Image 1 (cartoon, rainbow, N blue to C red):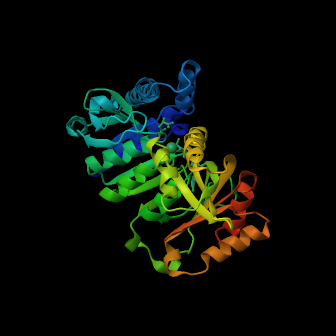
Image 2 (image 1 turned 90 degrees about the horizontal axis):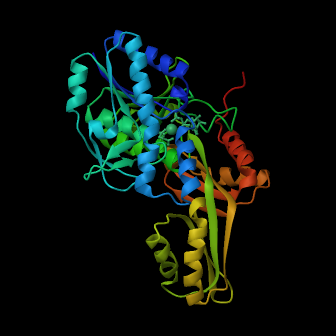
Image 3 (image 1 turned 135 degrees about the vertical axis):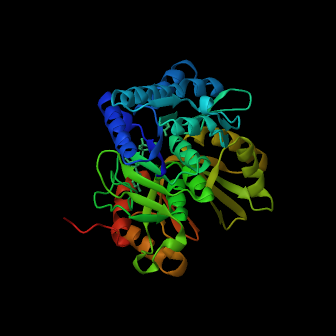
Length: 409
Ligand code: ADP
Ligand code: ASP
Ligand code: MG
């Protein structure tokens, strides 16, 4: 007998019919003799709906109150799922994050889990119940409701699996696994049987929202066996695994293509080329809590330099304001911002031992006449910033160039 933590995403609990289907699925696992802890998201669209309600009142909603508001989405689905389980004769109990006591820090809207009390869940399991926990939420030391950032139910699932020492954490969603790239964008995307934690972490960080980044970090850190599966069809899904378990024979150099549409580019042009300039420009950005991603500096012939970097689109206007002030102090020529760029990345642990990935990438983009605005690399990824209008074309071309297309049916 094993203990399984199953997380069902928004689409999987998007209607009463679907909630009933989830209940039936959970009962099947119970009948096979497994203990089951279920984590659910809010019904699809609900979190967005709640956020827009808040924004009708406050342009930048008060974070503490926003968390009180958005956490209600998951409170609805835990109760409905328990009712559906009971209708099938399966005893079940629902818990909010605070009731379990998923203790987090007090960073509203992006809290981190610190500790999970497993006693109550264990007692329920012992009594033959299914435990249903609200994803995405916790409580801070002072008793305030917190949430874990968009997509945070994945993290709740993995964190519960780690705390309960579950045999597996299963993430049920609307695709049947992790694909070489978003199957909604590239029809020829292939499901991967396995992917390493490291690659999955890069894919998630670079924009593949199939798993929240933190859930992958957690799973890697606590070595939680993690699988992504479809709620709607049977199948093996994708196992997220540690590197050594891979047979290098079948391993591709590039395992996936990720992309992120939430990018914006800001350039400060004509800055005097002196030591300390980059730090003078970037320090206030950090102080404003804005994350900077790709950074490029180029030197002009006239002893001035241009510094360009990317930020999240939501932060672009704030970043521009902050920068304009320092740019004026430094006597820079101008600050320009552009929110029509995207980031496309190729990811693969195989890059460590294979040369030529960058040239294959750049050649494929050049063949489609796609101009590369910025480039950044790490050991297992190469990212480029390009015009957003070429996103789909670039992803499809790279998918083909790296031999990822599935054999046509
Ligand atoms: P859930 O509501 O179940 O958490 P999400 O919408 O958060 O589901 O994540 C599933 C979606 O992630 C898929 O519908 C798919 O469009 C998208 N996605 C992006 N990149 C990938 C990828 N590499 N593999 C699979 N799905 C991906
Ligand atoms: N409901 C939350 C969201 O939409 C958390 C989740 O679904 O994982 O972001
Ligand atoms: Mg999700």
